[in-house]
Image (tube, rainbow, N blue to C red):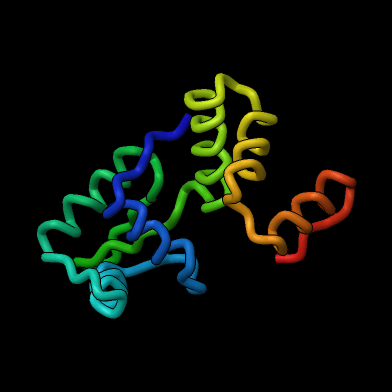
Length: 127
């Protein structure tokens, strides 16, 4: 299992995963965080990026005096890992318990329910 990300680390990873360039510069992260209403001090971002590198989520390539950051794990892989952890921890490995809770707890919209039903019946979910 991958290490869990803090909220701040996850916000950075979302920006990196959404970046169509494939690699992300420090300045891009600073600008995107500010644009999302979550400005970050330079030193704080340096520490967070360093943690993401040490946890194995990011690769860093030095280009002159700047680093380019590349995701080493996809968003889907992270979500799958964290979902598996949730199922194991909260539902003792019982996926049916999670699905039952989503339905019985009225946590799905009608559209989500129909998509889930279609998926379970062997169809495809539209993204």
